[in-house]
Image (cartoon, rainbow, N blue to C red; front, side):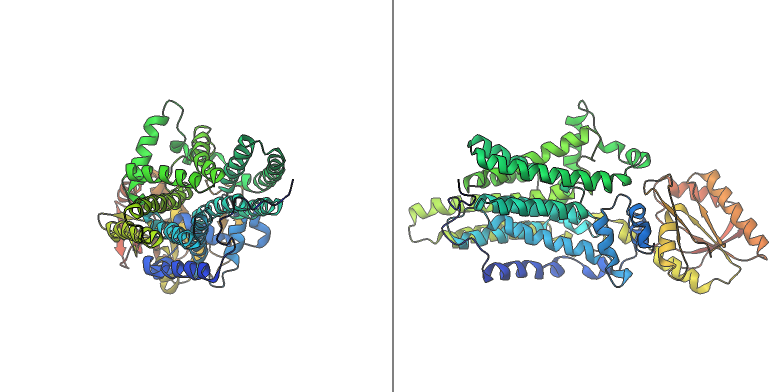
Length: 528
């Protein structure tokens, strides 16, 4: 049997043409139109980003520990960015990759004409670009890489179905190896893609192909195991498991849990759950109808896999951040569904109007539907992180950089700086002229801490309850007394929920003078 079979290929060219690259370029050109890149790239790093940014300041020899729950390839990419104030260019790049991959996924189906394939690609890419969930993933985490890798693997699966060959299976395996460096979700998406190929070839009794898929799949599984257990598993710890405990439902809790989470995620999908569900079904049916049954199977296996992992307490289920890849995949598959439905409508119209152009009609229907979607979600676009009545992100309500820089400029050598636990990673990162030293292991979700050997003036309050905060403030007063009655600067970041009342109570009895305005004001404190 030949190792290459073009029987499944469309009659109209299989390789990208200049028009494909132009189409992708047009989609990418709309990223700065849809996103507020200035805010994204220049805002201060908040708590969950600050430790990721801080890892860049640590020696390369500390990388295996400092990368923590972040994929090691992501941490390495951050080190390649010349200006550490612009590290979010990395998640932005993966966002662009997800848009391009979505175009490829739509384009690689067995459409009757190349032009219709390009329409499908544009619709898929636009659906991913316009997805409201993309607007809140401007943070310095690997979630955009999760989405990009997942859609890339699905596109490669469709590409392999287009023209079967061992080389294409090898490319998928190579993509898995690369993907594992940037996204732990590769370990979820890859088995789904190979599972789809295995199932379809087994049903078709294509035994030689089945063996080839099995070999490629086992190779990919070995790569996943080596990377995960050799590197990634270091980031798992008891504190992390406890943090995600609410995202691990039991089997009996699963139905109610899924209902709640779907309701919570619906706003960032930009359409009612029933509409999204209908488009997903249409997308899967279109994949099957356009000669990509293995890709359709992979799409079906994804929610099965994540649900199983959630119940097994291995991966948070339908959590906004960690399930971002599912939201983006949903948009891409829904885009295929929109194109499939529009193409079906165009075919019906052509029966009564033989001179009608089906591709132009399909493109027009898709444009109307996408335009309606965009208008209904207009408030999301160019989202700066805090839109009243819509949503807010931590990026828009924290600013540890301004506080750190103000104190650095105005403090004297004998002054004391006291801060809450949540401010420490950001303070250490933005204190660019002070050395930092890794402390590991450490009993938090990150698994490590840093010391600043030259900053004996700093007191970090690690407790979040009122008595613990008062103890920390008293330590700062004692230290200030030993340093000749120096001033005490108070920096706080990410004070939310019960922390607000704890700090209000703890500061009762102290004299507090606010010295800056802004999101997270700096204060001077002294005995009342």
